[in-house]
Length: 245
Image (cartoon, rainbow, N blue to C red; front, top):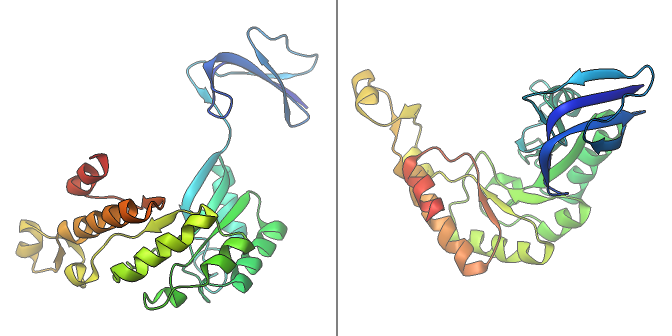
C-alpha cells in the first residue's frame, strides 16, 4: 500500500529536518520526501496541514511490570499501548519481581520482548540489589546484557557514598543514572503535599524539601563524578530552578 502525507511539518532531529514537506510511504517504508510530490496511482493521500510528521517517540520511563506483576501490566499489553500512542520504543524500569538487578532478568525481559513486544524494549537495570539501597547491583553485567540506564525508581538511594560509586561505575558504559529524588525521612508516609490543606485535613504532607534536598545532592554528585544523571519526574519549582542553574 502507498501512502502520501501532504503538507506536514516534518521533524527529524537525526537528519536536521524541520520544514513543511510531503512524505511518500511505499510498502511501509519512507520512499521519498519533498515538496509537491506526485501521488502514485491508487495511493491514499492524507492532508497533514497543521500537523507534525516525525519518527516514533521513545518513552524513557515506563513500568512494564513483567516479570512478577503481570496483573498490573505485561510486556505485550504495555508495548501495544505504546504503539497506539505513537511510541516505537520504551525503556522499562527495574521494579519487577524479581528485580531487574542481574543478567538473568535482563535476558528474560529482552527475550520476552522479542516474542511479544510490538515496539522496541530497552531495560533499565537496578542501581542496588533488590532496590534496597544497601549494595550495588551488578552494573557491568547488566550493561553487557543490554540495560541502557540504571535506576532504583520508586525508591531513593539514600546512601550518598553508594550513589557516588554507582555514578562512577556507570561511566565506562556511558549509561545514565536515573534518580528518584525523594528523601524518605522527609517524605515519610505522606499522602499529599505539605501545606495548609494537609493540616486542615489532618493528613500527613510531604514538603517540597523532600525532593529538593536530593536533587541538590545528585547535582553535586554528578559534578563530582562527571556521570550522566537524569532526575526523574521533577515536581517542585525549587528543583526545576536548581536544574536550570
